[in-house]
Length: 272
Image (cartoon, rainbow, N blue to C red; front, side):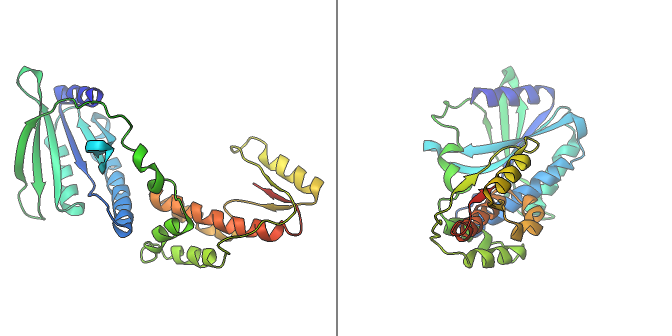
């Protein structure tokens, strides 16, 4: 939209801007690979040599009807130094083949021009694929992330979340251990007759005091989410991309639900 073009113009006027995308993921295995690849690229960009003269912003490219095409990055180098282009060329050749890089520069009359480059492999020269002027598109009815919120950030079913971790078993061995725990849980747990009290809140807001007071007052069982049986793996999944991290936490909720069903048949349950 106009705001994005303005951002590019401001960067191009001072130096040079670049953009590239992560290949589209159509299947569950590809989604996992793309999510991890995006995390790897982001870490590499954070280690880039341009320092304070460069900025990196997330990019969403989408087509007609709000169809999400790919995620990627916008890079602005205020001085337009050749080292930045060399770094991005090496990054794309090493991680994203076949890859494309868009280079934005201000041309005659203040127009923003774009050259599109392609990469095929290590040791091969990049190829100029085309040139065009950048113009503002009509504002979309919805943010491009909206139609893809379900399935990308929220899992509609236990099986949908399970499918993501199933694809991770070869690269994250702990995924199989989580799946084994989930598979032991009934698919349709039935809550007992005793009450369930859920305590929600941010850290350092007095949750612990309230939960322990209720536990002692009601002679209740205190459960936590995520459950203690997966606590040793939280750090591993917290370091993964959102797709994998959210699948992990979604599945731990099914483990907690199973524990609630079991304990609420005998005692009141406090869920922290």
